[in-house]
Image 1 (tube, rainbow, N blue to C red):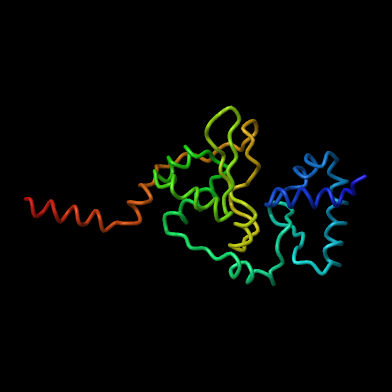
Image 2 (cartoon, helix red, strand yellow; image 1 turned 90 degrees about the horizontal axis):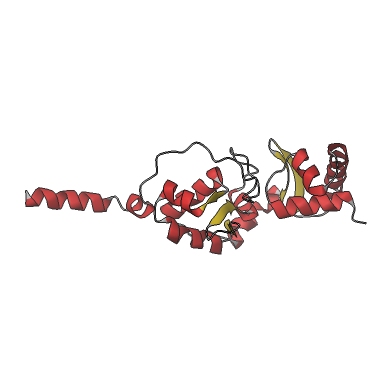
Length: 198
């Protein structure tokens, strides 16, 4: 029989972001009291291991993450080379996700179609096909938390099955197309041409 502490460890590893006790209990199929005991056992296990990982408690719940002393390795081994537009798209996914690709296009413009494959290739974003649809759910991965050295984000995350996805935040005015936003000089050149024509 699988030890509960080991099962909780697997859950935290697979989810890749902080989980409250109630969620862990749902995934583990046990009650909150048993989860509390299992978490304490798991934290004690890691405290006595010479491991690069640790179990920590955050305002959003418990998480399995890289120990701070190894954060330099993250930047050395997985350096990022992202443009401003891709970084803005990544920020939108992190703060609004999980969200569908059409929703992301509404927020960020058509540049999303170039940014998303790049972010997926870098391992910062995960795509999951929506049930019975051609679109995808988009959400950040554990690598995002490790690379940017954050334990949690303001908006509560959850896995993106269509049946119980968290309600999206209030809609905002769409931002301009990312490519246009990253090259404002094009607007100035157009204005100059108009003045010359006049």
